[in-house]
Image (cartoon, rainbow, N blue to C red; front, top):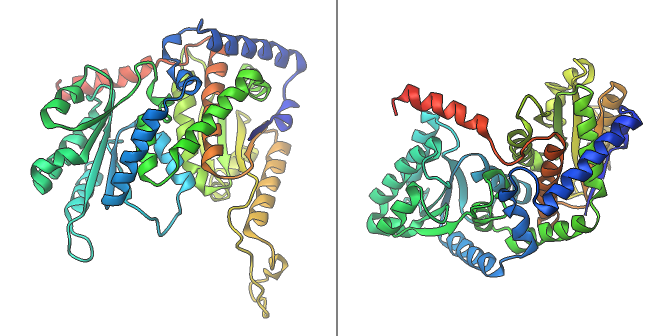
Length: 428
């Protein structure tokens, strides 16, 4: 379902460099399979696909349908992996306009006071018909003490208690660790509903746990199809992971050649948030010990009018990975104007998908000629099954590639450094 083509980039790497890198990638995959690499206690994202929990999928899907039927607004309160994966899937598979079901909003993903103040005002303001909004809140945090999320949760739950009194407890769902942490103290006191984040799954690998699946279900997306798309990918790559191993080896060899940036680009605006999820997944996994390729994100053709010049002729420090959808999901075509006053009749009758495809092909050709190594990652169609497959593709790639660098993919010691300084300055 997912194809990875490295031919446009392979010419930039000498055979001996690639073969050395391929051996490292093969070793990385073995470390994942045998759980012998550093951080192997965090491989639960593979275990959940090896042994799917259908009962949990049913429970999450049932609650998602319940909330979807009742809510006007569903607030996802979390930061990093606690919201990026859900947002990526929801944005990829939901309509841009005239969405059915509740409005899905995000909180706890930064410390901007203006945003939070306006969100609180919006939540308590009535609907157009004068009736109050029906609001549900999903707070997602293993520790419950991550400052951005904890502060937003404090403010929003107070608002829900003002609006609904004791009934507020029924509207708040906590997704957190099995035991310990701030939320697990509140849950029995307040009577909140709870989903458990597996202890052996880190945040950036958690989209296929209740962390991502509940918001995705509330958005009306079939989480079973999504999850089993990832299960299909797991089974496929356990038998043959050549595409992934080739891509990981290419990235390793390019890393060794001195490239420092990988621009994850797409011509499909629906996949912009998927780029944000990939950015965290790779960035937080590989950026350690002075190693790693910085994952940048671009949505074309929009960003060709801002970043395109640098990519084409700037410092040769980057590669590009294109996320591609082959099958059109819009039949819109260019109309014919008799007067042709805008001189666009040469495109009349062509679909926007075809025009967008030619723009992508032209961009790839130009960038390749400008000495940018290019990788194509394509899916046949934009649907839940293929997105599930894509999620596991990048999760497995991350593990293989980062192990090939000789780094632990599953910790993030540098994140703690900013927290220590921030808390000191705040007087904690």
